[in-house]
Image 1 (cartoon, rainbow, N blue to C red):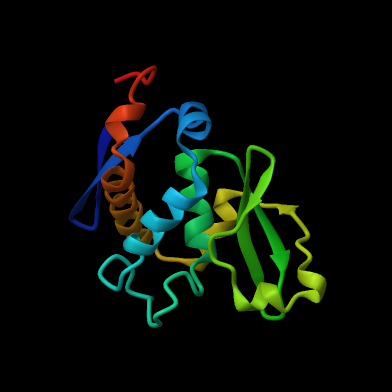
Image 2 (image 1 turned 45 degrees about the vertical axis):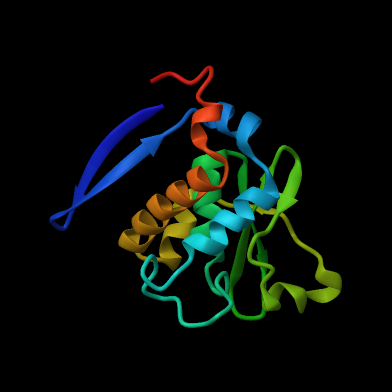
Length: 155
């Protein structure tokens, strides 16, 4: 694990960087991640949240964060209005947003078009991402305790 600070517009951010392969292998549990996501997506962690459906419209933000923390791939599929982003981890498609737009795609088919982190940046504010990332790590740690996964990680 590596810890660094980033200063952006006079605001300091704490960055915690884990080995992706170690995180992906040992820490990805969909239910735990979903619970931490629900607690992380709050109006104070993301200025664009306006609805009670915490993940609505947050697919690019969530897919990038999942990619940055757990590895895997960022994928996308067409919707009526735009792109919908999601992930594939350990060969399994993972979509924490369950967007209504995606549900309306014919037969709920995902196209699984490869995407990149750079492509997702067009859909959210970097400050929102940094705040959300920090909040997620804190909520995830509270949910399961990261210390039990530190074995084998470089500090």
